[in-house]
Image 1 (tube, one colour):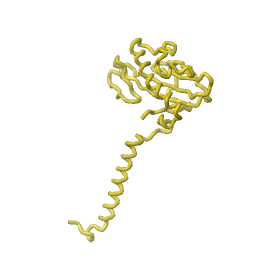
Image 2: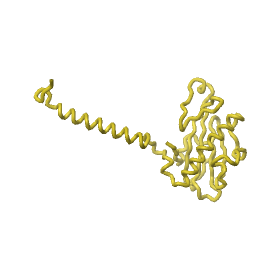
Image 3: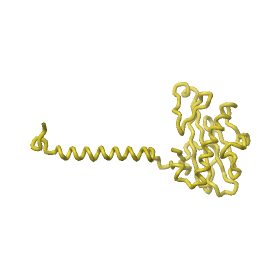
Image 4: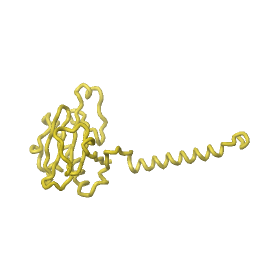
Length: 183
């Protein structure tokens, strides 16, 4: 059995270990409540004003409708072809535009009166060869169409006062967009 003479640092080691383990437990408990850390360009939807939270929820619901149309027709629908009851696309204060380039498709809004936030949905499709090798996880940023096609899906927002760049943005954060996360 160790003694204090033989192990003079034993009380300190035990105390430091208890503090370290307690800190890990507290960090784990906070992580479970707050979720993982966010990148500088990310924000949780709960940090948005309530009206923008409603738009985000409607938009997330509408994503599945868009994806269903993509699975049925093989192409991303033009906003004018999206049924008027699809959440977020039914908001008459928002004007939607589809942009496509290669394997990327985005839907971006501008508000009719210029007062609402701008929203962007970015879909990235994998190269067919990569799709066969690796199935994506099914989570907030990855969806799988009924056809088996895996998609990377992100939702972004920014103030409507910022200039709207042309084309599909490969990484919207470089143009001042903030990725909005639900969880």
